[in-house]
Image (cartoon, rainbow, N blue to C red):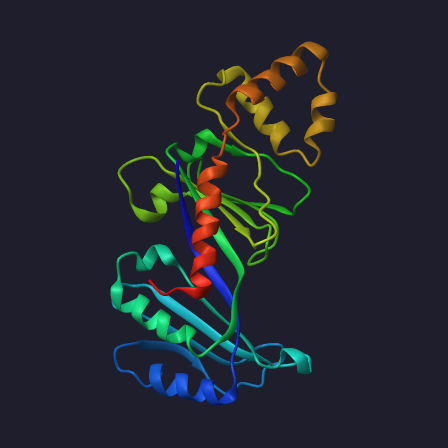
Length: 258
């Protein structure tokens, strides 16, 4: 499996003087394709200033400042958000990013997306439901996306067919988990490849039950023992070392200087 940082969102604070300087520097630069510029918006609980900068490599940097309706002590708050994977080796962006950090006070990680790429077909990977809100969007037996939690919130989980999304010639399923510096709730995920066909439908139904423990308890003792053992044998184990390295990289982005 491959672990990477798929999105990072920094919470920042910026003075009006620095905001004006930054916009003069970046929004007026013809190198950027500025899409969805929204300056001096008064939409309730929307960002007063919002800009999306598209780089030549397809990567996008989003920035929003001064949330309408924010309390007085948070009136200088803002955010910047981007996908570090899109900018790997793209020197131009990282030079700009270092310059951007100079305008901000107290940059810190608000949330990030940990991506884990699993080298299996999508229909071979099953996500276990838990106490988070669950949804599934299905187009076919191999083209479907499962979600836990609320979109763009810490605790969000997304499991989908990365092979289809990216047009790859090899099987790949991606697990995305949204976390912050305090919380990263990793779900249980299972590889169905080695599970006998006669047991697959039962196990899939149990894992998608609102209460897996209760569903298991309803099985006859023999079947319960068999299913528990199959789940134990085929649960995917994620590397805490790799996860820690990704988190460490996310922390460095709040003070990038390399």
